Length: 338
Image (cartoon, rainbow, N blue to C red; front, side, top):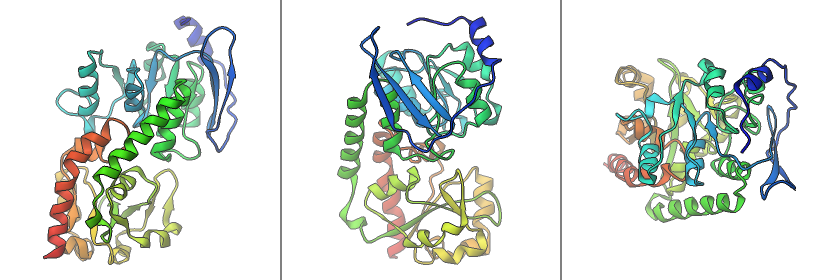
């Protein structure tokens, strides 16, 4: 594939780009005359990505895209750091395991989010940048798309279904059929893991931003979708909390004063940023009065890698998570039944 020079790319970054907003990720394909790769055009919330050649040097931002690219046969040359879920290798364990098993080279890692240095991405000389489940800004996108075709989220930051994420990445890589197969494989794994005895058990998946706060994830959020796929039922109360929705979080931020809204949730799923955060949150009287919390019917793993893996549905995290999830759920159910 033709590689652009650093000076050419730097010059491109100096040009102000105009991004056309859109609300879908519907691809359009046309046959190119110079290769077997069909040009793919993908519209998204921040603009449009036109991929004219088979991507060979992929960079990923946000979450989930790295794993799908690997599952489709291409190890990215660079990925956004996520130290909170990494193990002693400095990488997410399922990513490290997959690349090690393939005998491949680990990708370079760089800071993301608001600390993203565009030149770190530029140095990797990518031909495709994947960020469909991320929080990149319009300003960041305008610079990134000057380096390589860049795919952002379909409508809002950090909001995309796991199926759409896999499918749009597969489309960008010219492997639509493979993407469809990956989705089917994951659905098969989840269906096999579902338990009939979970069907009548309701749950809410909550989080905190510090004392006095309380958020509840919507059913479409990937960590909720993971639990639902195992057979549990999302507490219907979530549909009454839409007025509290915070864009870009796929959740309702209801505040601890509304903790009584979770009275009918049999189980509570949650996570904490640290042990200090856990101690602080669990000591709050209103928090303690949530029935599932009072009963000890809470799934709140302390392993940061597991918290991360169970929050993302993709070809690498699902098998890694499923073998670890059921014992935690069963323990919470035992407390519920006491």
